[in-house]
Amino acid sequence: MTGWLVGALLGLAAAPFLRAAAVRHAVAYGEPLRRCCPAGRVVRRPGGRCPGCGDSAAGPRPGSVEAVAVLAGAALGAAAGGASAPLLCWAGAFGVVLGFVDAAVLRLPDALTLPLALGTAVLLPLADHRPAVLLRCLLAAAALGLLYGGLALLVPIGLGDAKLAPSLGAVLALYGWRAVGSGVFCAFLLGGVWGAVLLLTRRAGRGDALPFGPPLLLGALLALLAAA
Image (cartoon, rainbow, N blue to C red; front, side, top):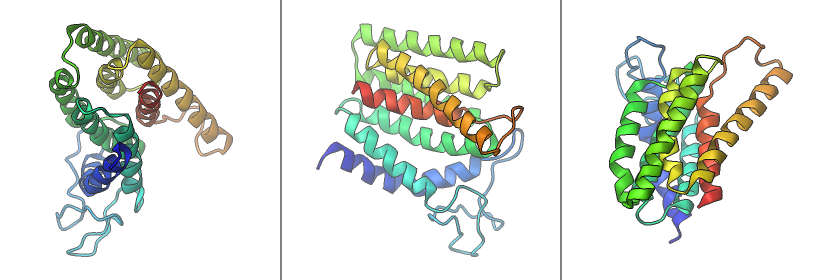
């Protein structure tokens, strides 16, 4: 069984839990996590409808999380080697949830970005234990954190993006500095194209805030696939 197929199946299996996490964390800053349906149950079905009471949870469109999880799983499965598979699975699962949360409420909560960073730090030595590679990952994480943290002070990029960037930088650095640079370039390219499309279709105005998490995540995925 090839890597992409294994990844796709894992994505499909994880999709109900990723949907539930995306719904729970898609709340404004300071608000409590959503329980997914008015009765307090956790909704995991593709249609977002509670199997107990029939209420529909406010969340991603039916089938959207499942489709993204399968596609991301297939892409990461194709790119992963044996040692890097746990790290890419970890980053991919959080990436799917973070993308949907940012698209819904324009924020990347610490409750997701910080565990992602911690797990990335733990799994990196399992992916590649060579000191030179680990040092490169550390430097890339610091560089992207400083880059996006500085940009957050100048342009409409949130601090959540600055907290997500180090994890993505560390993962990309496994494949070299070119992958790190490509990830940054792709993120800004995708963000610019998406913003231009929204402006041209009048779905957003010049002063509207746009989520940068999805372009950041997709850019990192494209750079990883190109480097693997």
